Image (cartoon, rainbow, N blue to C red; front, top):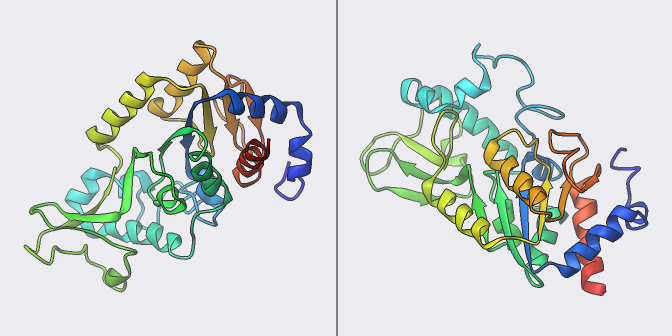
Length: 267
């Protein structure tokens, strides 16, 4: 069902909506897992798939995007990695958080909410969410690979028009954003926070706009399902977990989540 065909009126009349709303009303702790799909509704392109930046097998530099955006490539050919980091960041400049991000932030006024996001755009924080685990880092923080220089930047415009990788203003060595490149380890502080939150338990788990291909993204949903905790997927596309969750909304997150939070508040 397309975005235009799926509206809030249709949604709130469904049995699944009623059931999820009841689960949300009963829940004290709610866990959200979000992926590229939630930010795609802001107009942000994904790497691959519908509106994907890199749907071809190789980039124009004749390497897969996963190789271009890898830790090995950053070390061997930093200018190439930064070329594609700039491309991805430039797509963020004209976008911002949307109704789905705002709904999750609004829910924290009523429930304990934790967000595990694969996204590096910072939109959850912009919307006001306070308890966000950015498991793949954040593109807005740039640091030196050799010294202690670090800075939060609004965008990469200072490095536009430069084909070289940017250098540290302090020591002249290579700069990079605090994002997890392909082949790199996940940040230990983010993992520690994730495990601490999961150990406390949740009453309701949402998977929103993620293709659910990474084990650490899928596992919280599987664990919740085994424990009898209600699980919800919000994704217009089917994924590997679509048949495993209790409730599936094949609809935009910007329709589903605001409707749930608004009905919860009004109820």
